[in-house]
Image (spheres, rainbow, N blue to C red):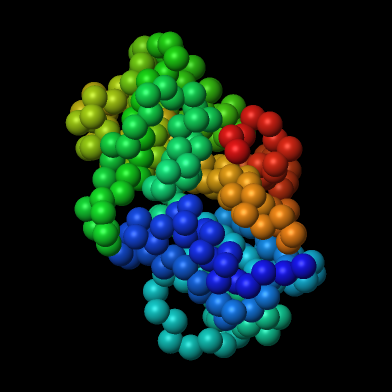
Length: 284
């Protein structure tokens, strides 16, 4: 069985409306014809060469990613650049590519909602806003309360366990008690001021820069810094559930080729854990 690509796009955008995407983003159909038939979908965080190769080998018709393959205008499509090579590979194998990025971050039930649920935040509510958006203001973060006050070091350990991330770091006194926290998937350093103004005792996000860490400390707020990949790969299971409920007659798989881009010194490189449907600790 198969369904038209435009129907799949409609289902994704019903869940994560494009109106929630940042104006600088590149969400939507990146490669392909909206009228093509789709019988197999691969879900991934990024359309890496490995993921594209997997889609080719599995004869998939569509790859749905969180991160867009391209953000800036492409001047030519040739094998002279990695992006050009990937676009050619997709087109030559008639594989469509669709990306839901900042709209999936900020929609109800999206990345940040799943993250807040995994971290056990109670009374989680939108709080951080990016004014540079098309349409209505959209939240790229959550604030909420832990079920009980714990130390900053305990919070960092909770984050690592929830996201299967053993690279979590924190700034501040590890023994300070934390109750109210903010969280933002991916790179949320731009929201440090907003988190502090919201009364967060700790802000949980990724890709924190040195200057941003000092910025938070100067405002009396602790940071918990997690891996960008680990904080967003959690959405793939939710996306699979959303699409499977709408289309029960096509094959939908989470990529087994998606990996962390970093290896840890002294540790054997291995494929990072991805959250599949059978991982019961991940919200559906």
